[in-house]
Length: 318
Ligand code: AVJ
Image (cartoon, rainbow, N blue to C red):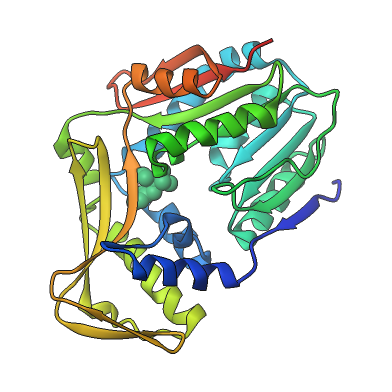
């Protein structure tokens, strides 16, 4: 087995405090969803992916399984495969086996999670060169290692593109296009618009795993910033906003209360919301429009038989 390379570009620990304070000053209050993913949050997200209501993960895995051969034909072997937000490694394993890339570069904000999965993959695929990078890709970023001779392909699974506002998604895709360069590609999983009851159920699972995931954000702030959020005094709220074409998640204050974070005091009214996530859903044509604005051309799209989820291959200009 080869040693993996690791690049630590993690934002200083101050960024959680800064972004929480900024978000608490906003009306309505909001905290970016990237802070869900401490080690407890990453584990809870994996548990969400196993709930019967949360269809995206298993549907995307089935798409990758069914079309790995076609994807490999489009991309070819020996590329530099960048994976953004490398969550559970099940999806990328299917891709690695079909593509046999020269270099695999997982990028994630959650350092422990990233290292654990990078080591697991390096152990299972002795032929694979693994360069892992701890990066916040919601801000400006570059490849920490960039061999000129390899075709570069970015894999962005899980419909994480949905966390961005549409204009931000275009800016993010434009940056991805620059990262993969000429003749590069982007393989991206995107959740589709569909029956509202199916969408609402996916973010309100009966076991309450999504609620625990949402509330863990407050637990994390308690742990890392010495705050005193009482988790009993906030409720999970998730619903599909049809006008905006997105799922919204919020934490709702159950009563009037005061919370202390790193020495500062914040009052919450009863029913006051803290917005924690948007998850946009896109029809194929809508995603194509975003891609065009970002300088990417749609090459292929795969959709499951129930029309739940899409997997797009986009290419930069030759
Ligand atoms: C990882 C952002 C794609 O939006 O479906 C799952 C996160 N939040 N359940 C999503 C999430 C609540 C997920 N993404």
